[in-house]
Image 1 (cartoon, rainbow, N blue to C red):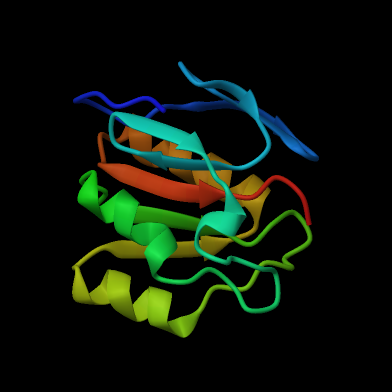
Image 2 (cartoon, one colour):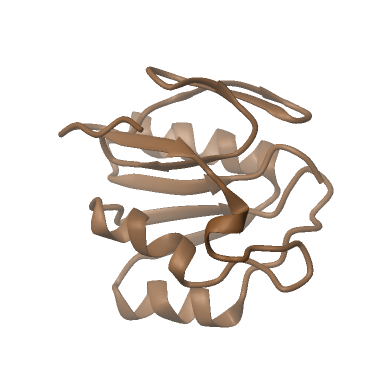
Length: 126
């Protein structure tokens, strides 16, 4: 895990089942926030493709200061996002972008370039 004050860590490259993040190295899926991030372990909060991403998955992003959150749905758009997760982020005043992984990485890095406090969940496969 990497934690530091400052801007979000850039995603340097990504392909099927692999992602490389500045200062974190390579992994499969990542949770990223302003100043840090870590590997995303789906079993931690019971995330599954069909049931989707629960609110507990994004609490860490908000706690670390994310004002924009990118939620990726995978390269084939198979990962669902629970409505309660979107409601939680809205209640916290966080802008949310739900998009396929390739476009999500592009948008995430663009937000960094514009100086936004951006975080996200990045799923590198289906």
